[in-house]
Image 1: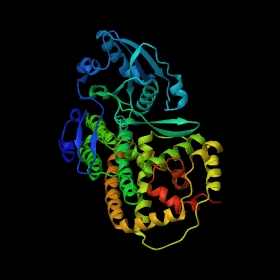
Image 2: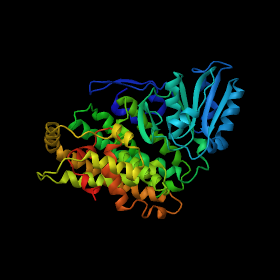
Image 3: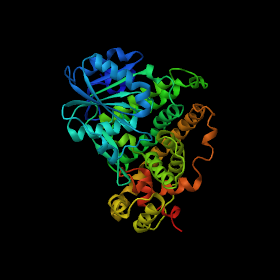
Image 4: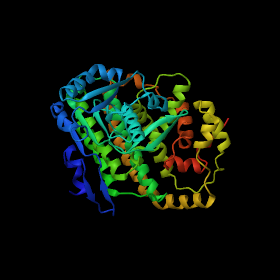
Amino acid sequence: MDLSTLNTQSLSRYAGVKINCGCGVCHTVNTQSIVFGAGALADLASFIAPFLPQLGVVTLVSDTQIREKTNRAFEKQLARLSYRVHTHTYNLPLEASASNVNELKIPEEAKLILGVGGGTVADITKYIAAAKKLPCAFILTSPCGLGVLSPSAAIKTDGVEETFKTPPFSAVFCDTDFFKDLPPELLPSGFGALAAKAVSLLDYKFAHLVGGERFCPYIHELGYAAIDEMLARFRDGDAVTDKGAAAFVAESALRFSALAQFTGNSRLFSGGEAQAAYALGLLFTREERPLKLRGATEFVIARIVLEIYKNFLSDKRIFFSPPPSNNIRAEKITEYFGISERAVMNKIRAVPDPEKLKFHAYRLNEYRDELYEEACLNVARLNRAWRIFKRLYPDDGFGLLNYIEPPDAAVSIALAPDLKEKFTLLSYMKDAGLLDEQIRG
């Protein structure tokens, strides 16, 4: 199979695939089974059998909402298949935190950890399975499945979210019949999360051209293909009433998620939009303000970040800015986000060596036009996505008005590069001292 044609294959063809790519790397998906479609519950036996012996114990991880809607069906089916089920159900609201991970007790006789739900449960399941050195699988019951196939888990420790490298799920299962009667905020969040990854794809290329990171043009192309194919399925607002809308958002998200196994890290999920959305979430939590789901927040702020990228890349002037002040930035992070000074100093992005910054500036100017062209294409892409995104809400997006005020966006974007370690265009702008103006005073 050729990597460039992978997006034309069914999701099951991604499982266990190995492709010698033209970029010089053998790309691999270590997930051995991917079952996706309506009525897939009938295949649960063949899905579980390779990982769990008869009468084996499986720990089923979910939250109260998921258990009420879907888990009982899975529990009954597993019992009929002669498996013993140990259930751990988290209360809502749920976050992927160290405290919640520690709450999960795995029986000594457990042979498999099976997560049920969306991205948060997926992160907890992968992390605890890696710590216990147990195989893990996942049943996706939400269109918010963007990171499900990725070989990493984002866990919050001491108020700071860290991304940990983990083995990916051994198998992923999704019966789209369980997408009926979803909470209304899940569909736009799943849609927005994937559309926002246009910024991450631009940062993926930027990190290669400017920072020298490994890059595969075919993965880059497939990432955009997953986004564009999702957008193409929404025509004239029809998908708002289309019963299959959640299914093809989930399918597109899983296709994109599989690409993270090709890169072997979280790079495709770690652009400026992810950095800024995480910072905004900390700000709103600190101030006890209502926060929309992560995917929706990433999409709304992605459009702001992308305009900043476009405007910055369009300006070819030579300029000088004072270097960033990490002391001031540390104080502001503690003030705005409530993170302890110790945690901040362990996380904050170091001020770069002047020669390294000079080299990055040279590389940026060398490839500025190429990056600017991609930024312009992405602005058009997200403008199209914005029209769809709003109509996925019952109020046609009325509740999005003034969701992120300019001062909130400014401080979140300015401090975001110090909270996530991946090198992005926002990181470069911080290194060059271009973001400090937003936090002074």
